[in-house]
Length: 101
Ligand code: SF4
Image 1: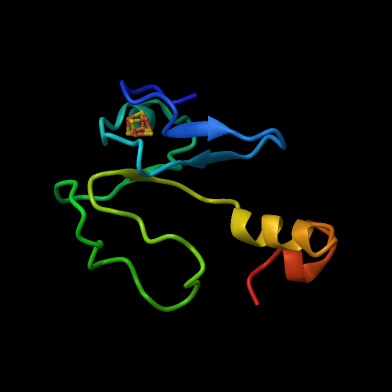
Image 2: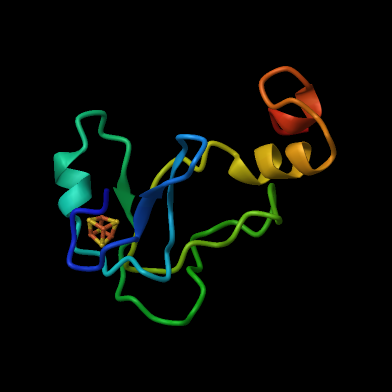
């Protein structure tokens, strides 16, 4: 799925969700250009270990903060889906496993 040299930065889970592994993204931006939906955005600044100062610390603290120099996209709130499944809930049906509180 990932178009860049760093294969595996974007991958499809068994349930069909396409998500990112930011640790593998090298920020080549090929996927940003190729995406027909314009759904990808580049986190500007050089890649480094410093947290991105533009990423808010409020809102959804359970979501990993995106580092600089990588592509980001919608996560499908995968943390809520996985958390809901772990509790026996049905994502898309049970609100606690579907949308932000
Ligand atoms: S920017 Fe990252 S996710 Fe996109 S193609 Fe390049 S390595 Fe893959």
